[in-house]
Length: 89
Image (cartoon, rainbow, N blue to C red):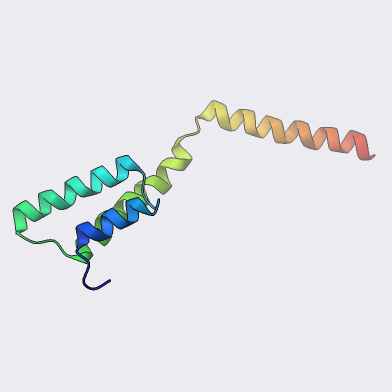
């Protein structure tokens, strides 16, 4: 693993299914920009971009639901609880 470059590890992550295509392309683009500006990229650069991308993905999961979706979910739970009360009493 120490012999693999950051770009090679990125390709391996994509090939193993750890990244989606758009994530892979975005991280690769950022690494190549860093390579052109600094002249080198390290494993820390790759880890930074992957962590940054994963943090934004985790936050966006909760943003996928709108307020009306949450209202419907809560009403569904309330209906299930009411039905359970009527059936088991």
